[in-house]
Length: 276
Image 1 (tube, rainbow, N blue to C red):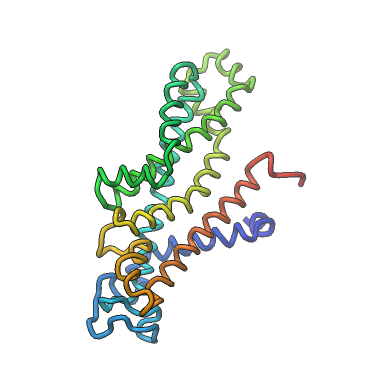
Image 2: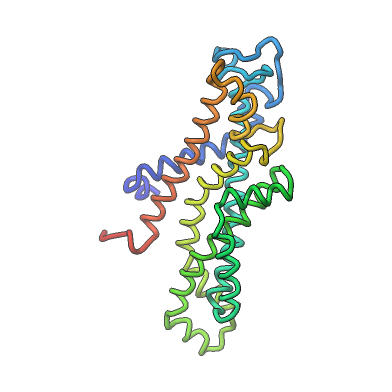
């Protein structure tokens, strides 16, 4: 850990930011001074003060509390979507790359069809069918990213498949399931970890975009993207803190995810390690 901090200080700072956001989300009911839907009609659109450090919104709700509770939504969607996406992408990439043949051809054509459209457009289409909700957002983003990531994981499987130790394992009588679990999967963990950290920022941003467009987490549950739309968009000129602080929180979380992902890629990718 100390070596990672010394060699990749920006990556360590990004990991610390993500850990802080995750801790805020998990402990939101303890850290937040008010409830996320606790309103005070006499304190509407109040500027930052000692009672409300980040100000209040048009309904008199404490903005600091809503930003903290928004971390729970964004981090939950981010880590949940990435975990589901890696599970789907790893399964599809392993099966497609290991068995090859017609199965690989069929699976890759389906992947090509998904990759023809932008990520946000596919996510909006699926969310329009499923409806808004936290679970539906995690399912949608995990499915879309998993199918896209399967192409990268398939390439890693093809590189490992060409090694002679797989032929030796098969010659000794190892079955397909044992070969994949013991010899293929452990040797492609590095690109899987890199994909997870790099995709975390994309998932958080996509969730914010879905919430901004009204297809994400429905109100009154706070989401950083949802806070940027609605009242934040209407009252932005009169009360700029409504858009400022959710945007800062969103930027910090995406910055932390990208910095951590870049640092792990430099350390785990053999082509980028360089000489010690």
